[in-house]
Length: 533
Ligand code: PGA
Image 1 (cartoon, protein in one colour):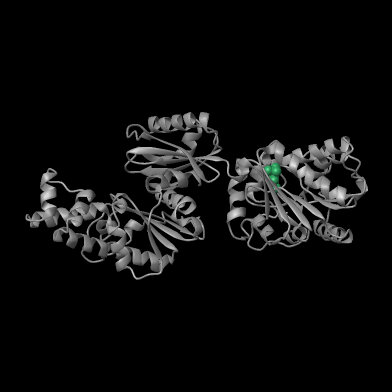
Image 2 (cartoon, rainbow, N blue to C red):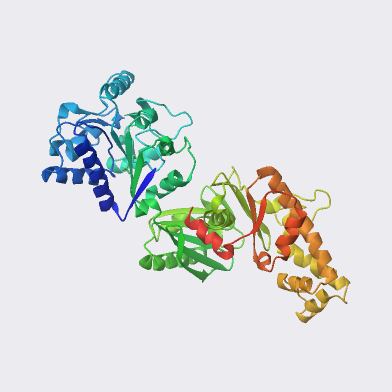
């Protein structure tokens, strides 16, 4: 697939028109497949201008439109029949008898589809097919489906398409629920294909198309098997500027990403008072950033549980708070919310260690143990709070109680909290140790840093505690490897940043081909991943 990246919609429209015009100039009796919708309108305007300047002669071309709603009257101003006349046919010297649009008034849609397919074949097939792309990845009206029909057929429209297209009708009920459409095979038989994508609302699907595998749930990815496809897209659709917001217990981090690069970051303190004030403060920072970096989408990572978009987090004032809806009161744009650990995993997947991998697991070691799982390039959500890896049970009998209500959860043994707890106990029992000396000098308190200081001074007490800690850490990692078989496990959190002691010990104890790495992005991973939601 060849990519033509345009600065904006005007440039996209001009580029597309030039390609269509060259096709017609080189082969005046070309068979052109035409598309409707918002995106090709600018291209049609440019073609009309070229015709008016005498640059293109349309008199010998034959056209076949991709699709038509069903049922719909030709006179309905939302029919594609009406659209083509309004936007192109009535304005150029085309032979109207050589134009074809599936008949939305037919009594027998199945026969109409067979006839349409036959007609395309009789005309020698399509030389150049123009396509738009739906937000759900449809091309024509080939909606996501495990078994995509191959040739021209009658199809049911998905809810997503009905909603997206309701902008052209008075209300959603007026949108026809079916359509007649060329099939994927009809489209793939075209000699050349131009795919147009404009606007930030297409950026997710364009990214899937460019980076993902062939997948029937994103029909446009089928185009990857065609040898001559040109994707013309504007910058907004290609990536757009995105804002990522990573809400944490102590601070909220913001990251602006453009074309896969971090271009700005900032942070504000977390307001643990009222939910409304906190959301307002986050929104105000988003608005401030927008004045300088006109981003098109916001992704938000938050701790806690998210059920049907409502967030409940114990360390923040969110209780069944619909974060996206609340933020939209201040900034009206596409806002996606996900769990913060999932966002961190996505950040590392898109920009860090996982960049060239398909499957990674991110394990964050801190107050607890958090995690995000990405398999085949997607965050795994499951039905209910998947990825709570800190709560896999590693000791069934006599396990330590956990705040979640279970006993023996992994985070009771593998978190930094657990390491400090065990180290404190051990040094109190051996007052001659370096670890105890550091503990007493620090007002009878240990932290991760002091434990590593003791390790570097070869303190046997610290070493024993640390070795046991690694054993627990490795038990959980082994479980994750056995269940998910990832390409890499990425460890993050303050203690992973301190020298190579931890990573070397883990690698030594884990006999596995799976890569065990330390997060490259660390504190930035969450906001960067949120931007890519
Ligand atoms: P749009 O539609 O150009 O109006 O966004 C494209 C499509 O749904 O194929």
